[in-house]
Image (cartoon, rainbow, N blue to C red; front, side, top):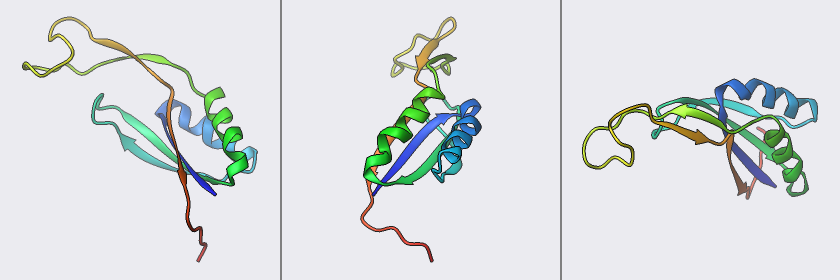
Length: 107
């Protein structure tokens, strides 16, 4: 068994969750926020059998897209961005982790 942890853009989360549920994949959606861009995200937790992982990833991939976002202005010498002008960067629609599950219980 695997746990698929998908961090997705807030605008995509409802669509992904509904598409997963329509295919029989239960999922839990948590509000989250990344520390780098300081933007709200959603984290989906999906428990599936090993052979279903590619299908779950395919549903997520089909429901997201790369997009441009404004990076927060950083000040000081440690920034990778300059401190002038608009700092746009392109980010993925989802970051996905697939974890082994040693035990699954419903109590």
